[in-house]
Image 1 (cartoon, rainbow, N blue to C red):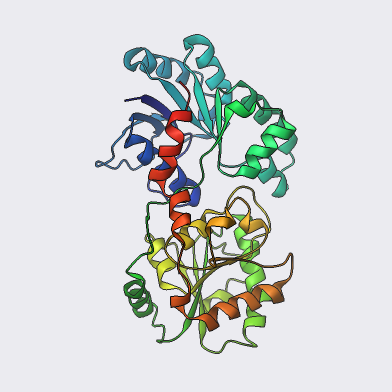
Image 2 (tube, helix red, strand yellow):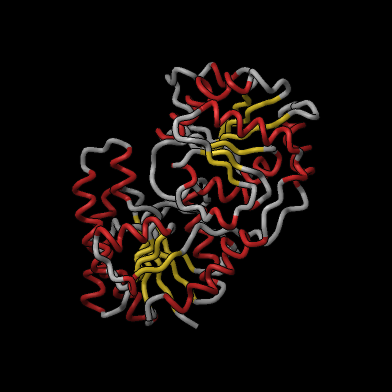
Length: 373
């Protein structure tokens, strides 16, 4: 059995975002086939039933990214446990990954979630060119790099001349293996919780509103999409999950009245996704795969999204579950929602090919032999 040391540079437990759930699912899946130790921040809430060991060796302070003393901690762990390889989440600690490899000879995998500089460039951050150079340097020094989307892998191959033998794809994974049987139960629970009348067409928008692209997507729903829905749908509600709504946000009062239900941050987001007839994500910025779409399809909920929101999702596995609107065409976006409302829930079934591609057990079975050796 392989012995793996993973370094996660920020709090991911309890998982509250798609990125957190990606890390949690990946580590759980690896721990089912290997002996895994995780170095994480002190503010993680450690699960006593986890199959892996989590060492809270990182401070939550932003200065942890320049903490040179971490090198000694990791080298000591390597000497004591003789790990087969290391995994670094994100490229931020690449300077340390390179040093440790140089001094110990232990190979490492850089586990990426996006091409990070592209995400920050889309958010208008002035320092994205500096991150681009650092990220390219990080990639070129890694023994293996995993990409969450084929588009990110192709970029690294073509633009940064990363050898194909160094690259592998590890998509966002799910634990489900088939269409769920408890959608009606979830609908009854959420309907009662929010006093939603039966036969109401329920729409969900999910994402932390502290993240600017999510907030801008919600503004599009309010100003562009919902006015179009009003023309065709009569009995509908739009649930907003995610929380972190800015106090001075100009649409704050808008989402507190019908047809909106502002549910805030919810611990069991899967229950909400199962309860609705469609998840919508009119996002236009941000990099990487939009995990909320994969999570929705996994539990049998169709998705309407933008071209940006569909990046990285293997459409050949989604059947009739993924609906992509034309670029900047919010009338088309609303029309796709309306079409779903006319189909009936029994029309939408997630294909078995989706579970074969995105289930964590299947991903690990495909990937374990490709990891550093």
